[in-house]
Image (cartoon, rainbow, N blue to C red; front, side, top):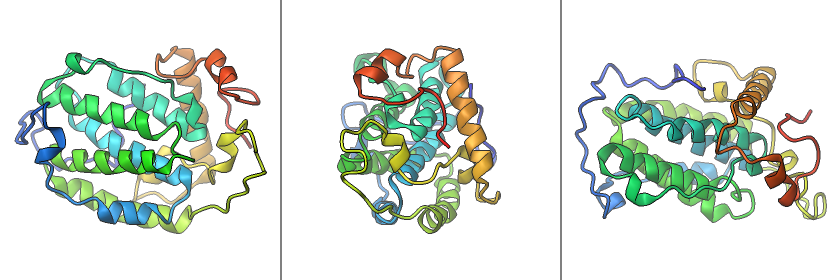
Amino acid sequence: MLSQPTWINFGGADRGQLRYLWDDARVDDDFTEDASAVLSAALKMSARARMVLAVGLYEWIVWRLDGLHTREEPRQVLEAAWCAIVDPRYLAYFDLARTEWVGPVEGPLWCAMAYLRHGLPRGYDLEGDLYDAMELLYLLAMHVAPKPGSVQGWLAPILDRLVQNYPVQPEDDYEDLFGHRIGEHLGPLIGRDALDPRLALDPERDRQFLMEVLAAARDTENPFLATAEDLEEDGFEGDPYTVPA
C-alpha cells in the first residue's frame, strides 16, 4: 500500500485539530477558494496530466486525514487511481453509501473518493467530469488543509511542470475508433514522482512506479481495481495490468 509521499508536507501543523467547517448537508457551501487558475492551467495539459493532477489533489486530502479514521478505502482508492493513470478503465466502478461516511473526517473522504471516481474513468472524453473532479478536489484540499499555503506552495510549480512537459495532445478520431486502447492515447506516462517539485522528471522512474503499483493492486486484490472480466466487458484490448512500451 502506498505511503505518504515526501512532497506532501503540512509544515508541522497538528493534523489532529480540525479547524474547518463541515456540514454533510451543504459540503461546498463553506469552501472559500477559487479554482479558476487550476482549471485554466489544466486546459493546456494532456488528458493524462489532468488525471495525475486530480490524483495529486486527492492525495493531499487522504494524507491530511490519515490517522483520524480506521477506514482502508481511501488508500485503496488512491492505489487504484494511480493504476488508472495507465488506463482509466483500471479504476472499478464503486458507489460507497453516503450515510456511512459522515462527519468532518469521513465526510470529506467520501466526497473526495466520489468525485475522483466521477472524473477519472471517462475524463479523457467526458472532459467536464474530469474538470468537475479537479475543481472539487482542489477546493476540498484547500478547505481541510491545516495550512492551505502548503498546498499552494506545492501546486504552483506542479501546474507549470505539467503544462510545460505534458501539453495537450493532438487527437485522431480514427486511430482507435472503438476505444480498445485508451491508455495509449492520453499522452506520455506520468508517475507519482513527477508531482515532487524537487525531483527532475524521469520517464523510466515513472514507468517503474506504475508497473509496481499495478502489480501491488493486482496481488493484494485491491477491491477498487477493475477485474480482468470487467476490462473485457469494457472493450479492453491487450494484456491487462501492464504498462505499454
